[in-house]
Amino acid sequence: MLGDILRRSYAVVSRTFAFLRAAFANVLIVLLLLVLVAVILSKPESVEVPDGTALVVAPSGAIVEQPSYPVFPSPIMAVGDETRAADIIDAIRKAASDERVALLTLELSDLDFASAAQLEAIGEAIEEFREAGKTVIATSDYFTQARYYLASFADEVYMHPYGELMLPGFGAYSDYYAGMLEKLKVNVHVYRVGEYKSAVEPYTRSDMSEDARKANRELVDDLWRSYVARVAENRRLDPQALQYYADQYDVLLRGVDGDAARIALESGMVDELLTRDAFRDRLKDRLGSDKELRTDVARYLSAVRPRLPAVGPKVAVIVADGLILPGDQPRGVVGSESTTRLIRRAREDDTVKALVLRVDSPGGSAFASEVIRQELELVQAVGKPVVVSMGGVAASGGYWISATADEIWASPLTITGSIGVFAILPTFEDSLSTIGITRDGVGTTSLSGALDPVSGVSERMGNVLQSAVEHTYSRFVNLVARGRDMAPPEVEAIAQGHVWSGRKALDLGLVDELGHLEQAIEAAAERAGIEKYRVVTIEEPLSTQEKILMRLFDEMGLSLRPAAWFEPIVAGFESLASLNDPRHVYAICEFCGRGARW
Image 1 (cartoon, rainbow, N blue to C red):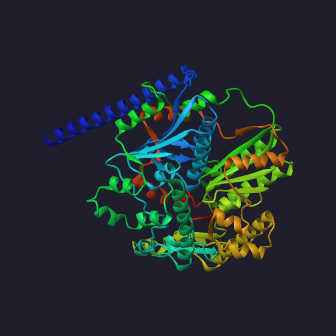
Image 2: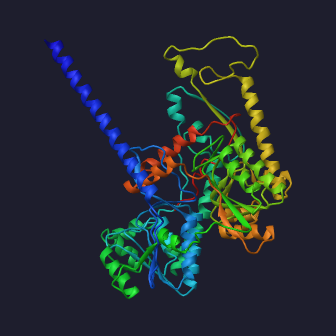
């Protein structure tokens, strides 16, 4: 009797799960089909820009060099989006000379992430808009450090009456796993060259080494000085007063019973406190119309960018964004095969007269970095100049692929350098032996089975890895010396894994000029001897499947970006998962991540 009841209950549960699984699959298929039909039937929308319009820059989520695309839905995905930095800059610059655009509004409440270099480039475009005699206003419910940096370029800054503006400063912090690895009896074998090469420290230490602390302190102090100086200049504030606001924020807050908005207003950080409705009314008053005269970046660019394909001489731009890994990789990762394929297209296209590589990468596989760099040299060998434009970060492997370019441009706030190399291998022989698992066998040489995560790394294999690291480091230094027209001892003095700001890198000779992508493009055209040219971005076209997923995610308001609270965890696992160099040798800047983020 009981057995029959259990069998019937199991059958009901099984049928229920089968029904739910089938229903979910069918709903997903229907959604994908609907999106596919919409993609096929949709036609480019004709966009009109009305006279007296306000160009609205309202980035949601992250500002990036190259948007990624969704691979598989995940519960840790956040509602949000990605906005290409170049699109924002292009729209603002075009609007500066467009008589139909009367005003620029920066609506920053949804901006989560941007590198300092990207914010500075957008800020310079805003300055050009103001120099054209047009007004810029900025608003946010509350201001993060990044949002406020961008808002400081505006003529007027508004915040919600219940908002907050806190400046926590800039820091360099890491999680350290040595204690956990010791408890798990995991042995981490490290081989490195570079006094300041701290990428391996989280796996070998419980705190920051003094060498790393010194280098990171120099970098964050340099970046913070730049932040304070620029914001103070933009807002016409005393830099010491701005520093006092950041340092004594808790004291200031207690003095007004916790009214954060009042402190921001009384300190001159914002011009006025406005609710959302009040801001919309203010905008209508400024435009002199009750109509909704607002045009966002995407719609504006679709109206003003040429629809015909580029003809004549071209300067090609290729984006190298993310970790550098071997093989074919999706957007957001720099693959040795996928990136060299793009570079080859630029080399073989006779209408492309120069190449600009836009680098935003903390490095990765040394082998993959060298494959990409060699492909760039082939472009130079056929007489086409190669100019590198550094974004938020171009360090370690990111600098490796840049080292022998004809010219290197960086933002003053770019994080670069980190010329150093390491190998790291975790092994589990001790942790496995505690549960009775051991390893034994025979081999034909002294190195058979000498690189085994279960049995460990032998002393002789350790010698092999250290020799590989030292050789790779020597090659790295010599490549930089050749590319920068320096003697190897000069490079050695500023290498050792030391990380520099773009401004300091200029003084040291690691970059040629300070500027952004637009200046690098102009420099490439000048080197190619062309005055009239079109700029084309060479990138892998999205597949039909990727287009459908992107359309679906747009409709659902999802992005590939992980939720803000989850991002540090994702970044940590991403770094571990990236260790797949065929020789186990890496050029990665651990602190750099996606660059300085304010």
